[in-house]
Length: 117
Length: 107
Image (cartoon, rainbow over all chains, first blue to last red; front, side):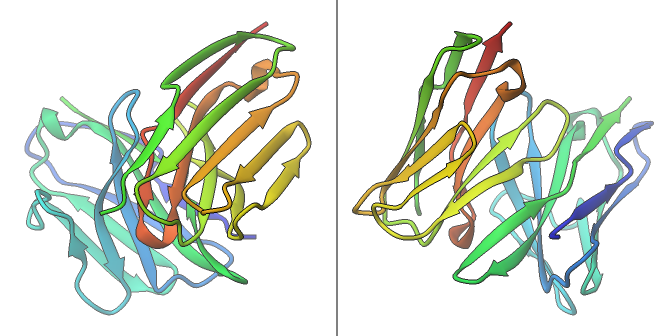
């Protein structure tokens, strides 16, 4: 149980285009999902918290108009990188929180490698 | 803001050797998770610990949680190349992650 998927796994796009990444919880409902960005050999950097049915909460320094988040249902959150530029190239990972008895644990998707040319 | 420090940053050992990585927090953990991440993939949950002094074993991996719930260690016995990866500690409730320890096990 507690499986999270992401699509696509890899995407290459031209500068100026928009890219949508989907995150799905396959066997549980997630009212809250999270989006992270990870640079090579570094840890995860939280970008935003995606809330089902309401606006996302963005971390300081993350442009909400640049990284559009929509949490359309209890099993789907999407991250759209608008007008992508080479500096947006990174590994994007989503997670969903699940209460395991006495602790909230995050389960991660496999990540999406974005390369902007 | 909770700060998680992991040490060492990098660790390279020969197959069959033992290793220990550490995680220290500036504040008490709500709950502590250890994850392993392989290159190009998302982190995979290894264990969740909640109770101070708790010890959990997962095959060759032993996880210890400090009595004060501010530190933890992960010990791997007889490491194998498949143990290679980035080991992350986290407090999921607080969305805090350590910088990770990159472990390389040489065949």
